[in-house]
Figure 1: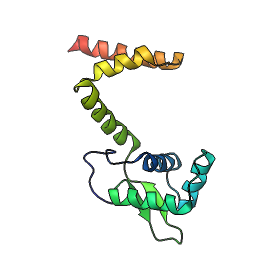
Figure 2: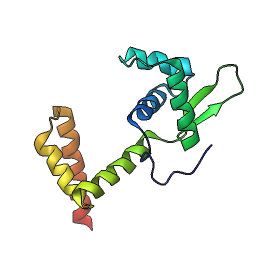
Figure 3: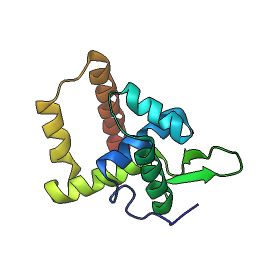
Figure 4: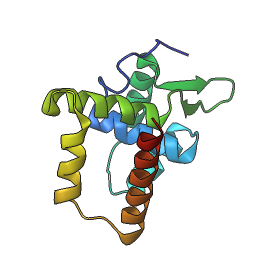
Length: 135
């Protein structure tokens, strides 16, 4: 499959992440599939560029390839959530001295949330509060 990742996502370029996002959403696909999806998103890239990104992603261990068919089939080899957690940990270390609370507070103060998102946040706070009362 590739190397074991300890710093999941730390070495991904923006373009590589775009390609990986396509695979996460599709589940798997050929170079042509990824190219088509990127074009539909307004990203104009060449077939060979997408192939290069997929090859790099495979070398880095983020993508696995089924080479048994005429057109290679690429699929994510690492979960999107793992990349998110790793990048978020790095962000928290770099900007918030390892404490997540200031990040959460800044997001709450400066970002917009739908009523549904606010309800989800409130439910999470209620669960955390209940767990703290038990401990």
